[in-house]
Amino acid sequence: MSESEKERLETLEKYKKYSNPSLARLFKITGSDRIEWRSRGSIIRDTKGKKLIDCLGGYGVFNLGHSHPQVIKAVREQLRRMPLSSKALLNKPLADLSELLAKVTPGDLQYSFIANSGAEAVEGALKLARAYSGKPKIISALNSFHGKTLGALSCSGRDIYKKPFKPLLADFVQVPFGKIKALEKEMTEDTAAVILEVIQGEGGIIIPPPDYLPDVRRLCNKKGIILILDEIQTGLGRCGKMFACEHLQVTPDIMTLAKSLGGGVMPIGAFIAKPSLWKPFLDNPLIHTSTFGGNPLACAAAIATIKTIKEENLPQRAKESGTYLLSRLSSLHQRYPEVIAQVRGMGLLIGIELTKEGLGGVILPEMLKRGVLIAYTLNNPKVIRFEPPLIITLEQINLVLKAFEESLEVAKGIVGRM
Image (cartoon, rainbow, N blue to C red):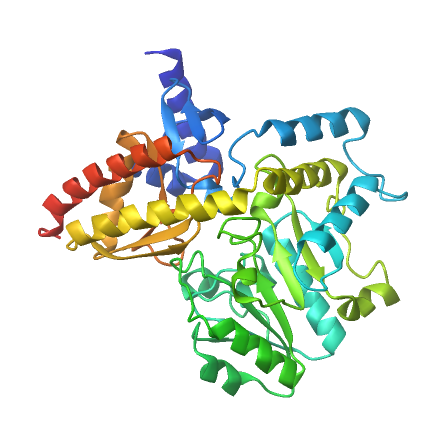
């Protein structure tokens, strides 16, 4: 037995005994029971040196790809100076990042709270909305995904993740995504905020009608309700603009960010709000805090990330690569209608809805065999996501498409027996 095979089996056994036995079984069934060892750009290598084209992108984390040199350099420089903040003195990287976020986000979003994750960003946004408005009710969308902490889970829209933890927080209601009349019906005098994804990511890459978010913005303005847009997965170039809401010229009152904000190197999240909403935090600057939130290492990574996205014009690159990939995938849809029900997406956030749920369990291992890493969406296992780094090359995209077509051939031979 080779040393790498021994390491793989030992790691799998430790998952079974000490971490997550069910996840270990799932990894084994899908052929994902490899150890990821090195990564650079759009490529992940396992302990045997085998390459995988990353067409999943860490569910939106790796917009810059893996180990981007500019982000690594910024983190190393900050590590030599001061890894963590004392929290008792001024933190320059935090201040610099907050200024940068105010400059790159749309409209008059200005004040930022820097957290550690997307779920924390959502929690903070919900707290700010309730504190500012003095009202309890939060409206979100069915099939949405905002995180798995208790508050974020309360406004997420799939019961399988919510049921074991009920009762969740009170005064949270869900309405169908993209249905403006259903949303308006739930807007009452005690409504503090509406929280929505611009595109439902984990829900299956669901794009609402083009007039939906502008109508939501109009209704929120009319009724004095705070609009929170979750750009945790769609932001920072993923959908062909710096933020997906810019496609619709809609500015939220609060925006949440995370995932790719850390450049694929550090965990970080943030919520950014208009100045008028920040009053509860001005009245009591310690009302919402985090020991590790806004730490210098994560802030340095985020600053380098934003600068690199702008310097390399990655939103435009995502738009061009996404247009090509979507077109090619649509052609495969025409050729394999018994396997693919629909192809949809924006930029490099693309979903392929399959005709049967079990087909994902066929296609994903076949793609792995051919050196491509993909996954399905969390709220809809019938939808496979293509969410590669924004730096993916045309040559790599073509290799992914070749592997996908071969995998569809295998699925086509099975679908009739399912």
